[in-house]
Length: 218
Image 1 (cartoon, rainbow, N blue to C red):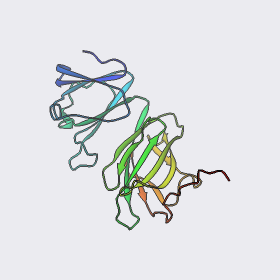
Image 2 (image 1 turned 30 degrees about the horizontal axis):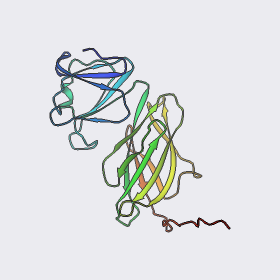
Image 3 (image 1 turned 30 degrees about the vertical axis):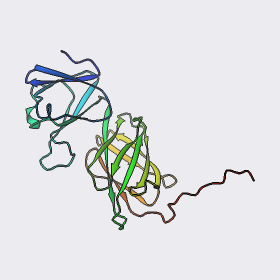
Image 4 (image 1 turned 45 degrees about the horizontal axis):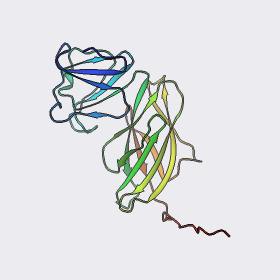
């Protein structure tokens, strides 16, 4: 089986041999089940895609190995066992975010983040690892990411805002832009490394309870 333009085909043996499994291009990561985890040894990469690959499921787990394959690889054993990967368009860059609660109240929160390139928002819990939230095209344009922070105990939204992400060809990495009109002072966006950004909750607004509006006309 050879890979089509927009897919990657993984093989259980080196040199594209043995049992094969095909994966289509998509912005969400594939996490391999126990039967396939650590079992792939080569990959046929379609002409229009590339593969972001990780040794472990968690992005910053100890001993993590990260690879980017933009062409067919006859031997991927250097990753020491594949667990998670993304099949993305070749002209895009990965974006991942971690939510950190530095507000001082020690309460758990979660964020819904939806980038321009993703249909459904990604849910990220504070204190957890980085989660992939989108793929940013390498065209220098700014792509918006809508952000809503929820109180985990009540599921009430407490902070809302938006930020922009773009690819910087001079540094070959992503750049974040925020505007005070739409990015609240209660949040801070900090670039960590490569494709990773930290979304820091600095404070929680006092008035976070919703108000029931009257249905009667004046």
